[in-house]
Every structure is written in C-alpha cells, then in structure tokens.
Image (cartoon, rainbow, N blue to C red; front, side, top):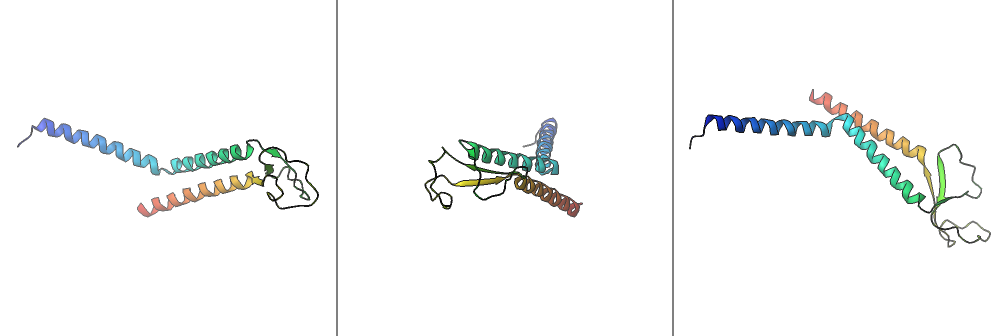
Amino acid sequence: MPQDPATIQRQIEDTRAELAETIDAIAEIVSPRRVAERAGEQVRAKAAELRARVGHGARPVELAGAAPTAGRGAVAVTAGPAPAAAAGGAAPAGQDGGPAKRTVRWGRVALAAGATMLLVARTTRRRRRRRG
C-alpha cells in the first residue's frame, strides 16, 4: 500500500532525530572526560563509604610500639565503644575480646584513584588512535 510522501519524510526525520540522540548519548558515555569524572565520583563515593563505616562510633588509637603517623596520611581507628582496661601483653587485634583495629592510608587511596584515572585516560586515547 503506497504511503503519502509527506508521511514518509516525517518518519525519516523522526528516525534521524532518534539516531542523533542515540549517538549523542553514546558519545557522552565514552567521552574520556566523562569516563574520568565517573571514575573520580566512584572513588570519592567509595572513600566516603569507608570513612562513614570506619568513622561511625570510631575513636583514634595509638598502636603500641608504633611510630607516630601524624602527617603521613595514616589513621588507626577501632570501631565501637572503648574496651575495658587491657591486661598486659599484645594479643592480635580482635582476639583479646576488643574490637579489631583498622588502618586507612588516605594517601594510598588517593594514589590508587589517580592511577586508575590515568589508566582510563590512556586506554581511551589508544582506542581513539586505533579508530582514527
């Protein structure tokens, strides 16, 4: 059944508009800047989650026999309330009835995030060069 030329032209224009939107969406997804931004957002979200998990009810502690970590980006924390006075002896963390100790080195977290962003940027550049 033959169609009206004006209807066919309208369908073609609609299809072109949809295709342009799809191509723009794909370009937005694979854009190196957007990839790097998303990676940075993911790292920031994970770091915030770690801070919230470790920081909730946490208190700073000094590790016995350890050198001070001030200025080096390391924080030692224990979760939960302070345990009763510990009897002498250095039992492994968590085995003396007290909470386990964690150390978060934010400098290393930042270094890993930066390395990941550089790797993503390098990979996208290589892919563009191969296509071009």
